[in-house]
Image (cartoon, rainbow, N blue to C red):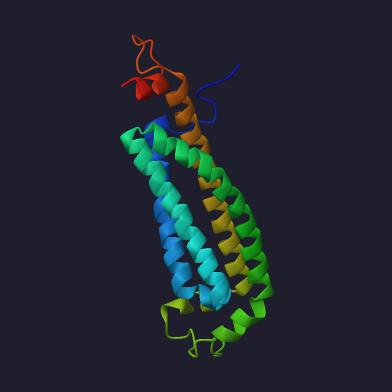
Length: 188
């Protein structure tokens, strides 16, 4: 027996749009922060890869918002078939970012104590100095917890959009209609 409302914390479509909007904002801000200050934590190449992946997650969340706002079967289907790949890569990204932060711990501390990075300037006196006032282990822990929370939001968003996709696919337009959604798309 299948439960249509199991694990739903929000109304299906409205809650998914709210959650996708939240994910869009979180990942867009994360991408900008990684583009600006990721070089202090990971090195420039890794920071660009991590920031680009945050932008990819933001684009996927925007696709979810767009597909839910328009009640688009095609866009919802595209999201459902691509997001699981993005979620898998997100798992790898969390592990790699945690490893790189732990490996670069001494380098980050030396930058905070007045060293210069590969671009030739110190983070002190810039907006990136906010993390220099905290203990590096605490900073790394909060960074990783933030990544895990973002990942849980992404997975739950995928689940909710998938449930909406299944509802669109399996149930007819209305109770009086005998035409399924796919038949309505191709018979029109």
